[in-house]
Each structure stands twice: as C-alpha cells, then as structure tokens.
Image (tube, rainbow, N blue to C red):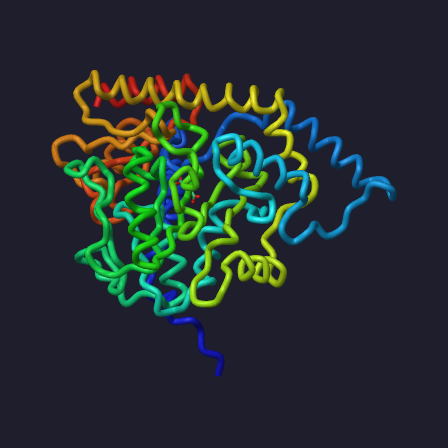
Length: 404
Ligand code: MLT
C-alpha cells in the first residue's frame, strides 16, 4: 500500500490566498451587486510594458523559423539574461556577482519552495513572524517541522522571529540555533525595509554560526529611500552565507508570465559541498526554468525603454501605496509599510481580530485585504492592503474604509 507524505497533514486548512479566494467567491455569489475591490493577494494589475511585449513578439517569431528556433533552454538560463542581470542588478551596485552564480527560474515563489531541498532534513528553519507562508509551508511539507498547534498558531521545531510594533518589525537574532534563516526585505507582509547596517548584523551572525540566509528580495524595485540595500550582497561577507531570491513579478508585472532567479554564490560552501554546484545539479535534473520567449521578455526589462516603462509602473503602484497609507493615517488608523514596498500594514481598529476585520471590510465595504494572523501569530491585530490595484480603486477603497 502506497503511503503518502504525512507531513502534509500538519498543514492547517488551505494555502492562505486560496482560502481567501474561496471566501471572496462565496461572498460575490451571494452578493452579485457588490463591486468588490481586491487589495488582498499581491497581484499586479498593469499590463506588461510595451518594450517587454515587443521582445516577446520578436521571440515568438524566432520560434517559428528553423534558423532561430530554440528547444530546451540551458538549465541555468540563457547567458544573455544572466549577463544583464549580473551587470545591472549587482555589479552596478558594487556587488561582485557573476553570471555563473545566477539561476533563472519560473519565479521566486517556486524557488522559495524548492531551495530547502539543498539542506538536510534536520536543519532548523527560522522564519519571521508574520511571514510569507511559502517558506514555512515548504519546510513543513519536507518534514522539517513538528506538529502545528492551533492555540499558538505555531509549528514545533521552527524558530519564530517576532516582528512587532515594539521592534519596528525588524526581527531580533535567534535565541536558539537556526540553520536556515529566511529574511524578506522589503518585507512581505509588513512592508517595512531594513537598513544596510542592520542587515549586516544578520550576515555576521550567519557567518559566525554557519547558518545560511535565504534572502527574498522580490520587492527591491520598490525601495525609495537611501541606505536600504537592494541586495544582501551589498553587505560584506554575504557571499559565504547567503542565497538571494529575486522575482520579475512585482518588478515588471510577470506574476502570470513567470520569471525569477536565485543567486547562489560560488563561495557558499557547507561541509565539503558547494551550494552553487548543488543547485546547478538540482536545476539540471528537476528544472524550473523559464521558456526562451519569457527570458527575452526579462532581458527587455533592462533595456533603456523597458527600465523606464517599468519604473513608471512601479511609481504608479507606489503612489497608490502613499495615497492609501496617508489617507488611512489621516483618518486615524495606525499604518506601517508602503514607503519602500507595495504593502500597507495597518492595525485593525478597536483591537478587532484580523479575520474579524476581514469579514467586516468585505461585508460592509466590499474590500478584500489579507488578515495579519494568516501570516503568523504576531500578525494578529494587523491587516495587509496591497497597492497593486488601480489608483481609482485605491481611492475608492480609502473612501469606503473612512465611512465604516
Ligand atoms: C502575496 O500576496 O503575498 C504573494 O505575492 C502571493 C503569493 O505569491 O502567493
């Protein structure tokens, strides 16, 4: 008799955003007259920029001619894309990252779930609380955690790093040993960013303790302030302790198109093993790369036209964030994030539980957000709104919340 992976049974309910989508669909079916404003899942709404589309069209045409047709993509990704990433995202910021340390993929969410395969099952994972659920879920599925406790909202065997108002949503160093430390800055869901000197503390800690930092920089394109690192490799010594995850989803609207990459430095060695060689081996066997057409689209993001168009889109999302953040603050709400990030992290009014506020907002204002408790126990009492809607919808949502 085949036995299933029983670790899946430890996971509570459905994936956060799938659960919310079902709730919203049920509400819409019962209230077809309500015009719902969706500020829940962090999904982009602006169409792909013209320079990206042009590159995609050209690549599609190439695929239709024998001379320019491409079959399997190289397992690490095409060099034309890895080269431009190494130069524009890293070397121009003073980070010594080369094309052979970059691995193209079908998105950071997949990489965030897959990267834990490189580590032994007895590795202890440390996650921020609240946290983007994928880091935790993938470690649960792999069997790296104990049971889930409904009363605390925590799994045994995981080191939780609370991010609260008291610590400015910046986690403190783990008090217990941790092997894999997941950090995401600018942060999802709190929207808060980390200064370079504060990130350096984590790099020093990881180097001293032999931990590996899994640094999710999916939102780096939203950084507006000086002194906030775009990459962990801006910190000294990061190449011996950190893997970085990057995404084109929020940077250039690729949530549906799918494109991302991991950076696994050649200096990152644990035991006798090179993690760069291990990840290359993994990508060779299992592959979660991206098609030629999409990699050409990614290359166009770095062209002068493409980067200008993408920056304009990001500017529009950031303007939504500012509008929501300042509007809510003026209406007396306590709000965080939204300056270097497309997420606004608001305190629920009157100490309302976050799922209670979710229902309240949906039923009385027709607005979908994400309850903080869905991201972990320290998210209770908070609520995430995204700035990925249109400006009109952001304004409309604000007006509806003010009237509650
Ligand atoms: C989010 O809304 O936090 C994510 O981007 C959605 C996801 O990747 O599941």
